[in-house]
Length: 187
Image (cartoon, rainbow, N blue to C red; front, top):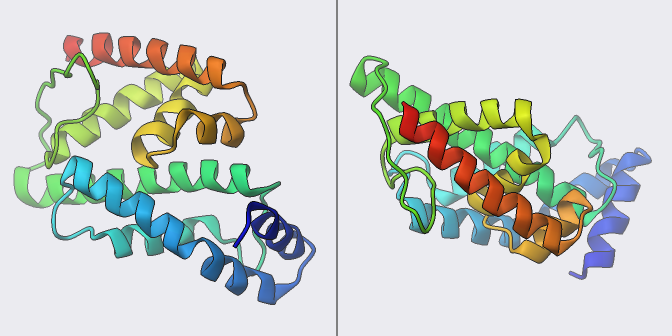
């Protein structure tokens, strides 16, 4: 389905056409699953949160009844990135409570890709806490991290989701990585 078709379905859903929500899920499901599979492969988030369950849980967070309050495809996928982050963090919190008594470990970030280490719920939680702090300082940079890291969007896709230029995304991504590296190194 084309980008224009997704945007039309989002508009129909906003206008109250209930069948548009179901059609939208069909239209974006494969793409969301690909994003989730890619994230799962890159970050080994465990067996309890499969790519399919990540997509389903994130989609439920996005849907408000039969209405999907998004301005277009880019806005939808930007919101999907945030929803995926919430699902991954919730899963990590649950895993951490169940297996580790709620404690958090300090985290060092890899210089090339300063994000949580694969498979460690403590790292996901530390990253989430750092992102919450980054949001206070630079909300757009935090959104760039959500789009790039949690949803695996390209620079161009992130630019579309946030309605900024690709160069702005590149600058924010570099700044966010440096900020997160420092914040997580202090823990």
